[in-house]
Length: 344
Ligand SMILES: Cc1cc2nc3c(=O)[nH]c(=O)nc-3n(C[C@H](O)[C@H](O)[C@H](O)COP(=O)(O)O)c2cc1C
Image (cartoon, rainbow, N blue to C red; front, top):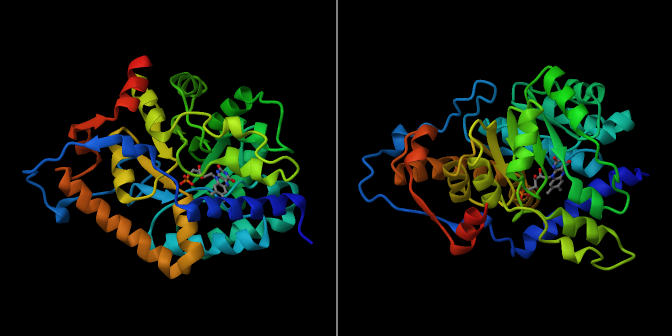
């Protein structure tokens, strides 16, 4: 019999997959249109997708974002995701390891990722509210190359058994300063404002994943888990900033940390647009989960390889050879997004 916490992991998985299957997700990056360049003087063969960031030396600017581990089922998905990451040489984050800190018997549902991909770039994951010792234990558990600490106030608020205290900043600062690997502070789908980004920067954060709305929606997921009252928090389903809005917020900060994005990345074009708006790398959760659940590991490997090739073609389409060239790509915003940007 698995614990209530393990059961929650399986429920998240099933409900996130249901959102993908409904195929009603519309990426907020659809509100950004790239101005085409008919004479780009470029060549696909010359495109270099490698990240120039010394702490995140990714071969491709997208990675498998934090989702699984903590139950038998999600442990086996971690194994499949790790196989796909190994075969395509992309980075991968595991889901929150707090469950394994409480119950070491489920640690193997996370360590399977390292066992499967011994030389890969693996990212540990833990929620804000944990202390330095927990954060370092999560890193050590999977011999991680980096740590994500997720901030998720809105998710906790909707979750029936969620936290109700959010005194996080001092511990976040200590974790950022003292753990043995680089730290990314990450939202789970409610986005970040300029103020949040600035506060995190003041705490010492050098890497921030804006984690915006328009993809997997945890307000809806947590509300569906609450069987007693139907859609109790329906008024919060649009809470937060979209991924596109969050990227525009980050642009306003002069000395900003390195920005990553996640939330509603459904295609290589979404990766490109997020990068044009300033994301150094992009996490993909729901779409890759759906791919592995419907087409297994081989299908996910093909999908990732397809994204890598298509992204190289898209760089050439816009005249870019590498990330630094994307700063020259022109774009226009939808009137709604422009209105947002002007009011901010
Ligand atoms: C099934 C599932 C479980 C998740 N669990 C975690 C988690 O444990 N920690 C975390 O930081 N984010 C978690 N996330 C959030 C994702 O990492 C990501 O931020 C979010 O799903 C938005 O990306 P997407 O639209 O590509 O799915 C989870 C997402 C899914 C779909």
